[in-house]
Amino acid sequence: MTTDLAPSHWPVYGHDWAVDFLRKSMAHRRTRHAYLLLGPQNIGKTHLAHAYAMTLMCEHEDEAARPCMQCASCKRVISGNHPDMLYSHTDDKTGALRIDAIRDVMRMIALKPFSSRYRIAIFEDFDNARPQAQDALLKTLEEPPPHAVILLLAQSTEHIMTTITSRCQILRLRPAPGDVVREVLTLHGAEAERADLIARLSNGRIGWALQALQDESILADRDQMLDMLYQAISGNRAAKFAIADELAKLPKPSVRYILETWQTYWRDLLLLTENSPVKPCNSDRRAELEQVVVRMLPEDALKALLATRELLQRTLNTNANVRLALETMFLDYPLL
Image (cartoon, rainbow, N blue to C red; front, side, top):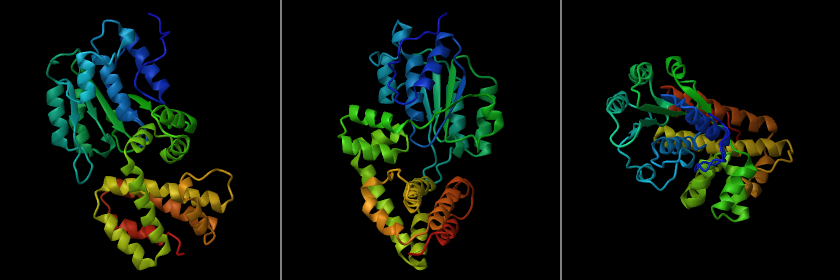
């Protein structure tokens, strides 16, 4: 059977290589029972997972035309009401997958499909599942039903057991180039200046970029996050600790999102302290950045960036006291 496929019509942007890989595996009848899609938050893992599920379940007679997005099965996947699509919800407070939620999905996926060739389970933020919860998946991965496809979505494999990763086909999604993000935003109606700003802020995450284009509150929230950071670096230690107390009351996923936004600001400051020709990511706040940078050394910006990254990559993935960790991070922020 040939693998020379026609150009993809999947509703996926920026991950052509992943789409081609999945299409070729289907053309060779080599669909795996478990896939692990890796990449930063909002890079498009969920979108790709649903497009793949839609293609597997599509009812169109011509396999090359799948997903047709017109048949009853495709429409049900799009609407989120397909009876053979299974989802596991995370804990609202911790963002972690609960062991009982995973067990419920595993019981459901063992049943025969209602209306399709497959039953497909999607687990978002699987790297937030504790080892005991991940264990609940192992038996199904070791002896999967013939109709089961499990799609695990995670930012990295760091907190996923090797017994899980070894049984999955791993696809690592990479950030899309800025010009690709701008092109996608323009196709969705964005004006050139707005498309350029959102593309810079997206860090190659097309999913985030499209959400920001369609929902004005996302950029408004980002402004509030950066205003909070500006207050922190402009205030004294007591002001910083007050902000730490405020952040510690939020769910961990919210704290993570705020710190990821702060990282872009520190990166911009570091580039400006080094007189880099690279345009700031937060280009709409250039005047503010230039006011801050005259009171800061390059090592100050680097120290703050590394402290933020350390909290993001390590502390938030443990049971450490979040407020204490935030206060420690703020001690590495410069006093202006």
